[in-house]
Length: 323
Length: 275
Image 1 (tube, rainbow over the protein chains, first blue to last red):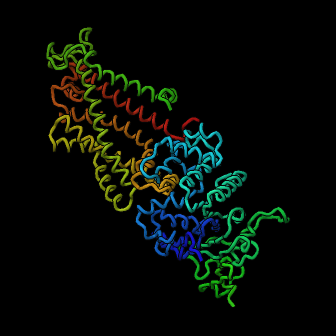
Image 2: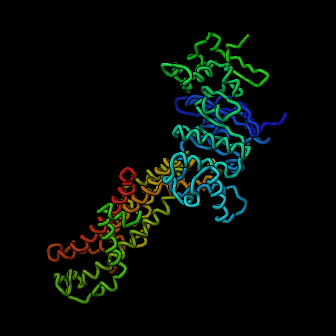
Image 3: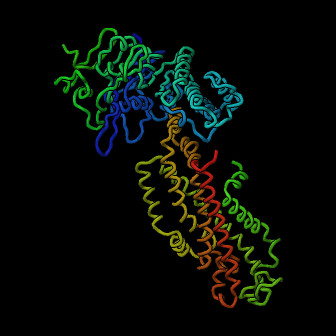
């Protein structure tokens, strides 16, 4: 068996607040192979973004990675020095943010900023003209029209969709092995969303990069990803290939998430929603964290739930499957 | 935005800038504008204003207008030099405190608060009192008094800017902490700093004049507005022109900086900015 490109094992990222410890990421494990696209799906606050930031070791204060391993190309990222980590960020693993309106620095031109991303990982000091040449190629590649005229424009002169294209251009500028896209379409119009997903698909086939797509929407993930991990309250509750998750969801939470996708092929009066509220992050429920909202909950769910996995790697953590 | 557009946009900014330009020209071309030597005691004392002496003469027989013109040099010199030094001290402290946070911030912020618990004028009098009265010491005192004010503004801005997505994005691109701080956080913290610096220039004029008034700044016979004010005080009934002229100039200079500062605040405020 070949080694996965990225192997996250039992990752724990906790936030130490005055009123208690928030276990934002609490024992998350997954693998990502070269060229694979993995979707991480969950509600707001389920720890998806913190998982992504933990991989790059950019967890904001007062958060801390307190346990686990992140094996990337045979090295544990959690054991690298800050300087070594800087060579990983942007060069081997890059990140695309949710809100393109805010992810470009307003005081610099976009050409300069994409160029900066290249320059940060260049040996020696390449000529700026050469960098700009590269920038123009990259921006043309992500579908910015009339690039030559626009490299010296400022971020506010671009639309949201274009800014996200620029961010994507920035993130691929050093041909990274992994692109982490943190809800890259949430802040965009529906029509633009489809274009951005198409662009990611296109780039994936062109560069053979692995992608981790973070989303709260199953529909979006199904467009791009091979495998899906469903997160709830800091834990992965189900993992499997896109077909398995869609055709045979095991965890009640996954089933309910799938029912939340708006459908036009059947006649429904109103959109489905999941009853109840996400758990209090400081005092999560014992055992399976979904049990207070789960329609199938039993007394046993308050203890640690059973972990099942079939031969295809379809995994779920749920007491329903205890025999 | 071009300075022209800014002047059209804000009338107060334009007025302040024009006054400042006038005072600056006066300081630069003092040798050509002043009709007499500002130090030479060539005339009868306490002559009232006349075509020969526009603003009269002082108690030692020196031309008040000439002294006023040369006095602008001291005022502008002290204001710009001391505020620049205050920036050189305050900006790095504010950047480091705001950006690195934690214990570093706690210590630096405590020191800033400690300094700010003294009014600027008391602190400057204290420092010049300790160092001895001279122009250089007055500038050192003003710099030290103003540095924590600059630092606090920068720190506050940095605290909000460093949470912006684009700062995290730059770090996610592999930029180091120092690089991110100086190249990305600082330029985005500039707007309120610019306003504060301009307003500080006005306060520096006032503080310098007060120090000169108390004899703690430039020493006689160097012409300075504060010193002229102090001399005039003694002859307020017999020769009111000695006091009025430097008083008006100090007011105008402070007003100019305050108008520019307020104008900048409006112009740089994105909510008020017309698209």
